[in-house]
Structure formats: structure tokens, C-alpha cells
Image: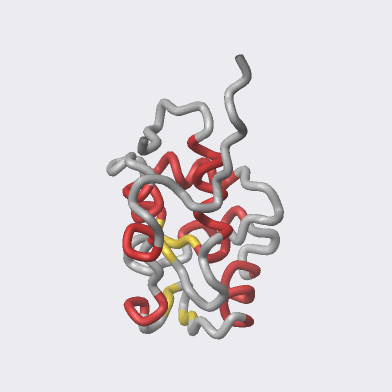
Amino acid sequence: MKKTQSTPNFFDDVYEVCRLIPAGRVTSYGAIAHYLGAKSGARMVGWAMHGCPKDVPAHRVVNSSGLLTGKVHFKPPSAMASRLKKEGVKVVNDKIQHFNDVYWDPSTELALDKPKARKRAPKKG
């Protein structure tokens, strides 16, 4: 079953997908939303990223044009670009260069039915 914006664990599912993005690769808010079954939920993914746990590589999530639109939530704002550069991603003026070469699409990289990283506990009852 695919997730939707109304699912209580949508943010957790976003974080699990983000944890699967390999170093040196990036994806977009919209690609994560599409993978989770919320095709117009890019803003919701953005909200999830704004308050994500520290172990989530939020710097690897950018807008669909490769712009570092989430940089304002990093301290300092240049930290997002710095982290990407350390992973080998070329960033110029807050835009990823050769975006198509480093783009990681969860819909093609992961199974289409649900995030692989999410392990659900059996229901009690």
C-alpha cells in the first residue's frame, strides 16, 4: 500500500527514503512525494525535511531544478552546499551542476510499493 499525505507516518516514510539516498547523489522533494504516492506532495516533503532528525541526509534533497532551496534551514545556510561538495557534488551559486548525472529517483531505484527501509512491527491483537 502506498503512503499518502494523510497517513500519520508520512514524515517517517520521507526520512526512510532520504536515508537511502547514496552519498554523492541527490533527489527532489517531488520525487520523494511521487514515490510515496503523494504525487503533488512536494511541499509536504519539504515540511518533513524542515524538522528531520539529524541522521537524515537532508542536504541531498533539492528542488526539481537542482536548486538548494532548503539551504535556509541549515546553520549556516552555506552548510548544505558544503556537505554536497564534500560528497563530490558540484554546486555553483546554489545550483547543482550536471544535475541529471547525480539525480537519484527513488521510483526507479527502489521497489514501487513501499520504502524498503521501513520495517513495520506486527500489529498487536
